[in-house]
Figure 1 (cartoon, one colour):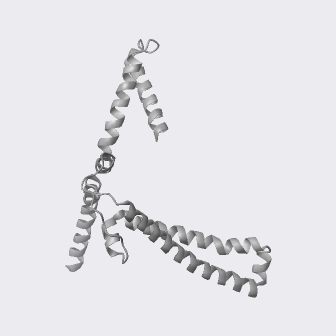
Figure 2 (cartoon, one colour):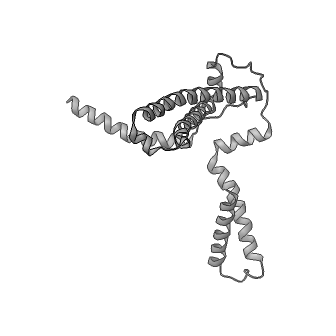
Figure 3 (cartoon, one colour):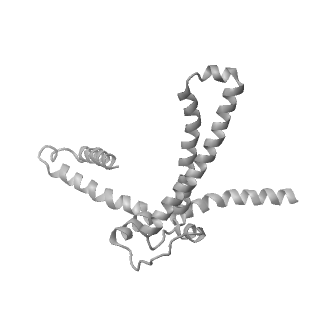
Length: 196
C-alpha cells in the first residue's frame, strides 16, 4: 500500500512540475523597483574581483605545486613539457579559469538578488534611496517582465511597414498577395536577424 501511494505521489509530482515551470515562465520574478546605485555597483564589482583573486591565488598555488612536483619526480612529464612556457601555461590557465569562474558566480549572485547580496556583505555601502526610476529603467523592467509583448510590439509594426512598402512599391505592388507576404516574411526575418 505504501509503495502504491509513493508511486501515486511521484506521478502527481511529475504531472505538476510542467505546470509549475509554465507558471514560472509566464510570471517571471519581479526585478527590484529601484536600481543599484553606482556606489553599490562598484562594491559588487570589487567584491567579485577580490573573491576571484582569492580563487586564482588558491588555484595558482595548487597548480604550481602540482607542476613543480611533476617536474621534479616524473621523467615522462619532463619529456612531455620540455619548455618553461608550457609549464607556465599549466600553472596560469587554472588561475584565469578560477578567477573568471568565481567572479562570475559572485556577480550572478548579486544580479539574482542585489538587496540580499548587499545586506549579507559586512562592509556594504550605505544605500542612498532613489525615489523614482528613470524612464530607461522603467522601460527595461517592462521589457524584462513582458518579453513576448515586447517582441510582438517591435516585430508587428515592422512587419506591417514592410508589407505596406511591398504593397505600394511599383515593382512589387502588382504581385499576388502570397508573394507579397513571402517578401514581407523574408525581409522581416532579415531585419530582425540583423538587429539582434
